[in-house]
Image (cartoon, rainbow, N blue to C red):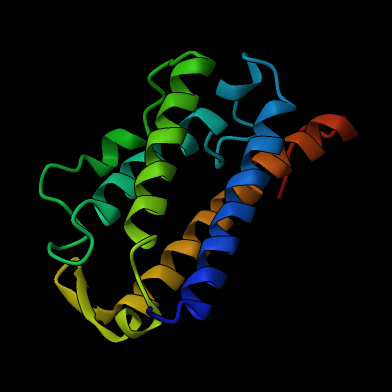
Length: 157
């Protein structure tokens, strides 16, 4: 049996990040999902679209293919498609499902394997850590939206 101490720690942090996002998303109305709190911020809907596309690109055939898939339309991820809450949450669930499915079979010995993202070789551990940081950073945005909405503050820094 493979040791999974570090992999389990990564999985737990992914679950915490997912839960944080879901808690923040649940606090906003359907309309607020699509609102920008200022012109420099993406709406929660756009963040969900982007994270879904990123997860699909990074974690499809995670160990075998480059994490930046040729068909990915990164610019298109940042255009609000006007999806309903249930559609956004379906994207959310599919993306996270792929993350967890890709990480579940890994053991700590796999963390030193080499994968590529945008043709850049890196260890599995680094690739996972970078994605965890990326997702956590984005999950702060829905939390910011709910905070500023609740404080009745118009713009956020």
